Image 1: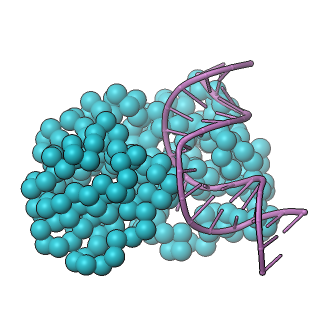
Image 2: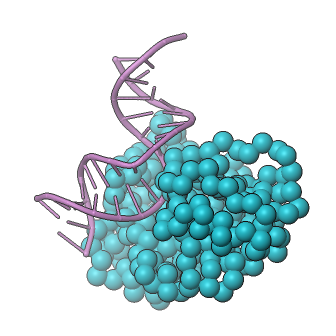
Length: 261
DNA sequence: AGGACGCCCTGTTCGC
DNA sequence: TGCGAACAGGGCGTCC
């Protein structure tokens, strides 16, 4: 689930429920999710401290312990963040459980263990090292156009390339292209200026509306592609049967009528 | 440079 | 219905 809108929902949740509380226990259920740290290292840094603030960049959630220590969380293809109250059962696939002194716990959930957690010292420096592009919601039209310039390859793989723009994955790339009326395989460098602008101007409202819907497909408008991406379903705009094509090794859902190649 | 592929994992869905 | 195959909202490395 975790693309930009999902991670923004997690960020807001952490920000609203997990800041300024004393951390009592840190339990690592599966250390394969740890990157460049250990259960001991994690405990040493977090125990008896509290979280101060949060930042989201693309699909990454960063939580500050102090200016020089940030917990960086990534979720892979499946993941979630939940608050557990008191003695409630911890959710399945909880890989990290952080317990606060008020009895609440923050659970980092990663069913397929494709997520990763690490410590970083400087968000700015780290984002640069990771070569992540600007966050999709913090990107100007001019820079968007600029980044598209001279790129070869399909528009969908360009949108999903985190070094170009951070935050867009398979689902929202499809959603944005659907609303912009662009075929996922269309070459980026063949998009005319107007179409490229339309793509930019579609990206932000789609991501923002998805956040408003709490990144929950059930709360998204039925005019969206997202609730319809399965075999035999019809385009919510024109009724044509939806089609799929492989792009960057992932399945792209699109409407052959509304998004001609 | 960018596409195709395999891989890391495990739970769910698909198709015979 | 049952079972193995294919697939799933990410990203990395390798080969071409």
